[in-house]
Amino acid sequence: MNRIFLVILFVIASLAAVCQGINSKAIEITNIDSKDYTTFETTKLKIKLPKGFTRRNATTYEHTLAESYISVQALEGDVNRNFYTFDKKSMFQAGIVVMKETFFKINGFDAMMIDGDQYINEKEFAVSILIIGNCTQTYLIMGSTPKPVQNNMNIEITNSLLSIIFDPKMETTPIQDAFSYSVDTSGTGLIECPPMGDTRTFTDDGNIPSKTNDMTSLTIHEAHSGIQFTEAQKKDICNHRIKLYPITWEENSNLEPQKYSTGKLSGYEIYASGISKFLKTEFVYQLVLFDNDRYFVVTGISYGDEKKCLENFRKLANSIDF
Image 1 (cartoon, rainbow, N blue to C red):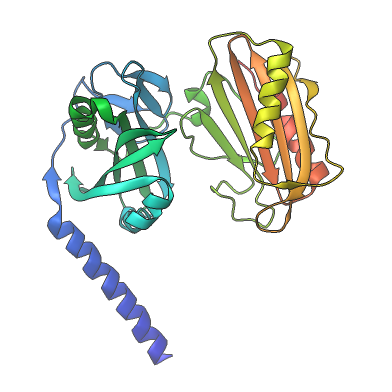
Image 2 (cartoon, helix red, strand yellow; image 1 turned 90 degrees about the vertical axis):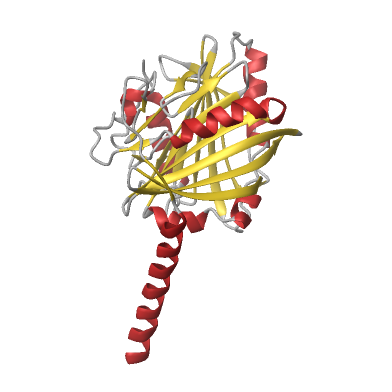
């Protein structure tokens, strides 16, 4: 018992020493709220956006001509522990090569800036990530811009991220009020999680990823095409997306898109089971619903009861309303 107690004390002391080491290197910044600030809906953050950035959705602002964006994601837990989650190895696995890490204290709250490069579709982007929070809340704010225009835009994005104001006492906008459509989770057993960009996520325990045995989750991704699709194109979109899913389908699986209507929206549905990379039977549900020049991709996955999941996934999808 004494040995265990000593080990616990050693771990706590080690963590405290590391945190003090970080804080001693931190660059102190004081940001003062003003009319130039924009509030990130559903968060406790305010930011000074670079010129030309406009709202894309509740968690993302973009500069369409410069192909640049700034987006925010809520994270679980203590900010200092989250610093170690985003080390160089994990960032590399996510496709980002870390060039520099800098620690800050912004209005008294610990923060870390990660600068790096990312390749997407053979195109190089300059990426800046700011992680800020306290012992119970953490936010990740990410800015990205193509490398050819890096010199000015990247500096503007970096300055914008460092203008952040985190206020734990700030009133937040409910998630459902931050999107152009509403959903009803009643009777589905699903809980909405913090959104990321145009995607809303629902899981059976409110965690991403789910920590239950079934690991049931459903996402709704809203996309704008700018055109109205033909029926053949709608089926192709549904077909193409399901084929990208990393799973070995069961031999009797029917992957042919079937017509589906919620009463307000119509589209195509596919659902089937297969063996996942974890060698477990996984149920996969996909529904693509179309509304003029936009569409909604509803994707559900679970290791639980397929009949029950299908019923709940359809119930939530049917509730999409404007």
